[in-house]
Image (cartoon, rainbow, N blue to C red):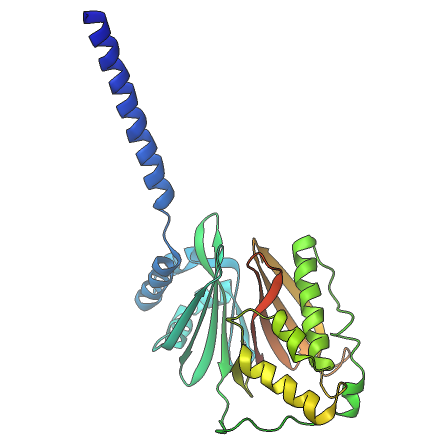
Length: 291
């Protein structure tokens, strides 16, 4: 009886220890700061001028792109943290979309500008990846203005409709690029139905001229086709250089674009592609002009 009791007690102690160990491991796994906590911590670091804390919350590839197209690297931001802190005060109309994994998209308004913030989850935790400012359109007509007719230059669209100065680094990037080629061709040869099928429900387009959700973009393509026929669209400006970064089910694209392949860049562009399990779709297209 004594041996049985001793063995039972020992078994109970081991079982209890296992539960404590398992609980501690679960707690440790859940102890990683969430995106919102990281976002709040960065705001606090900027407010207090804490460069060390701010540095830990910025991805090594971080870029802050001002509304005039001026780009600041992580090192440059840390060298003048006060300027970056001032730019990120007074955010309004902040909207966050959870992209189901390692990336968060945050849109809002500050200083009479739109902003797009992209956060990524790295081994070190959540870190800011891109902060982009976009001028708000000066005029906002109550009714959708008729689309402009295609120009002579719109008849051809080699870049970006067929080719790009970028080679995908893996199958994930290749699949995201295939979706973008499809979208650009659907804009060049207006096809609202197919474009809609390759755009996420939360997609938004933000430029110095417009800021529209997916549905309005689809309506504009339908109006182009109605007014000017199947050849009545535009593929947009040429991509001069591009970088892509994949984070699981999200691909981030950054690109300089211009009027043609030999021209100087006229805009800096940020795009996000998301795969929810039903194929790659665009979930953000944002740009600011280089002035």
